[in-house]
Length: 116
Image 1 (tube, rainbow, N blue to C red):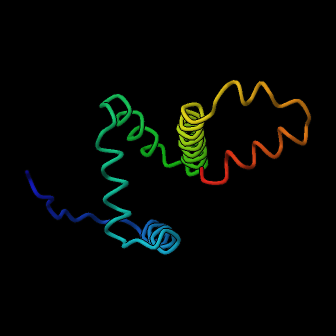
Image 2 (spheres, rainbow, N blue to C red):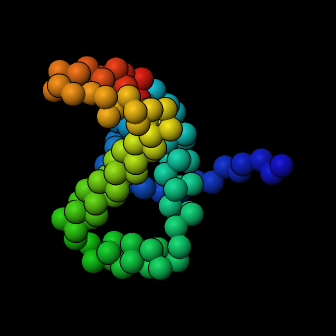
């Protein structure tokens, strides 16, 4: 198995502050957060890279902010789908169909999502 290698890069102070903020929130090292970001981006197809480089070349921070929002939305949607799939495999449809009152539905929803 190949071991990882250290790479170095230059980035501006704002990006370093953003990485440090995430690292602190997630209780991870700066290098871990940076590595996770690189791993994600490195796996994207060339067409996406071309679009990203073109966007960065425009130097428009507003467009980059919109892209960040769209990426965040995609991640949250994916996380929701994973949670939904996990619930589908553990919930008995007959149990759900037996719920008749709003209170029963609320209590079941709370019980089912406590550990998700």
